[in-house]
Length: 101
Image 1 (cartoon, helix red, strand yellow):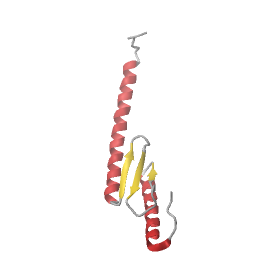
Image 2 (cartoon, one colour):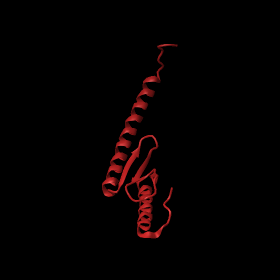
Image 3 (cartoon, one colour):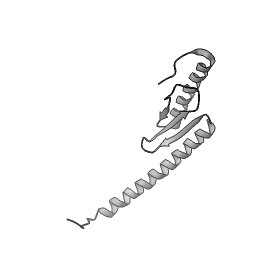
Image 4 (cartoon, one colour):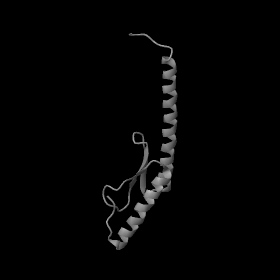
């Protein structure tokens, strides 16, 4: 029926609104965490991916083109970033190892 509203429509709409509000708050907090990591690691561009629901870090280091680190939580992201930094130091010191793709 067109225009018919059942008793559950307002509640469903309210739940959807609350979910979106909580999601927006979560995303805002995650963006803040990404910004903090970026400030603490100035040789990286760190972002929170709204669609992927993951943190993304792009190195501004001498690494192989296409090197990107991503993780669902900050700790895992920082671990990946550290691994890339160690490989970059080894590479620039003449170690000659290939960078990850």
